[in-house]
Length: 111
Length: 111
Image (spheres, each protein chain N blue to C red):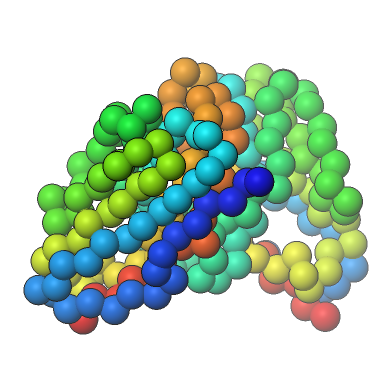
């Protein structure tokens, strides 16, 4: 069974702090997506990483795909209250349509 | 355009009612998905349609019946639901080996 473990599960920080969220698996994925979701809304795609070792930046968010394509991280610099939400990683196995979702990280950024 | 639309936004139904959830995408994606999401949990895959054919059914009870009338539309027919089926129902679409896009969800309450 493929599993994606995210850590931490919960994070409450002050505005301006930095944080890193981890997404780990024993399985290899062809690509990995990161989403942010607000209560009662659908997940919004932030980024897709495909190549092992790949780093992508989206303003204050930095995403990295592990060299072996089994893990990923999301780093937020100078967090803002607008970053509050549920962060989800989702891995895809090549040749399938099935995405494996991580366990989620609930982030709260206090003003 | 990366939009997936879902109707209705909210639905309240009794245990003897029959209702349907609708999903539409115009991105030319050949895979469409139904997920169920409980509060503070990651989405759980229910069904996957690829090329308008059901390709994955994650052992979902028969009171949930999916339908894919054409490549742009996906329905989820509901009948004789239980209160524990109350959740956010998410539709998504993707191309093979590519990123998945979610709709805004339908908040379902079963009384």
